[in-house]
Length: 219
Image (cartoon, rainbow, N blue to C red; front, side):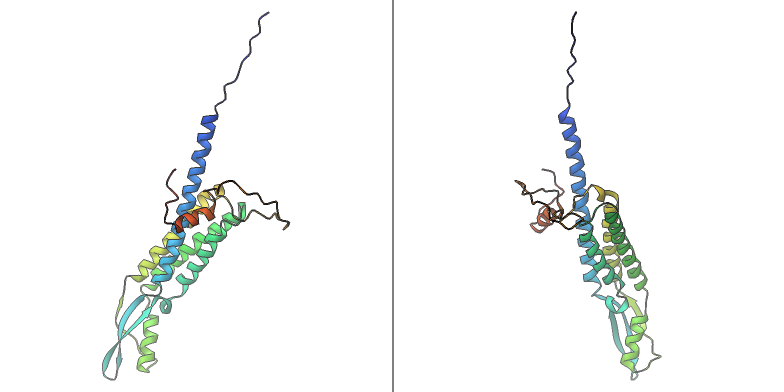
């Protein structure tokens, strides 16, 4: 009687290739979210301090120029940019449902800041208040009202924050989490020191960005 043995041929290379592709995609989406969120918040915070509206106020038979920066027009974009920065950091400190909720907060912060900036681009309340202060007439209104490009720059930065939130919502489940040294009970886990730093961890990507490297570039 003859015996026939079937020897399965494993395909380790294909499996490793699929895992590497998945890891690379998660790394790229993570780096994109970090870049978009950080850049967007920076743009919002800087542009909100610029002059958004200009005009003139009648004082003593003459006209005095008045102007208002973004903070005087509306403080919403600045506040939401700070919330967005906090959410951008927190999204890596939580997992599962918590990460989804924080990612949604990040996206909503960007959307709210963009809407507030666009609405502020046509608001004359701050200039009217400044005209009343300069002229001493509480009923005074600004003349020759004009707006600069800065409200729209602020809105563009807010859209970047929104994009970072959408990246986190779409790909966040595959991202690593920071601070995994403690369990839910608060007991510290045994620290393990890897031989080399994991380039996919968020803190390593931040370090790469600080060094001016492109973390989305493949090895």
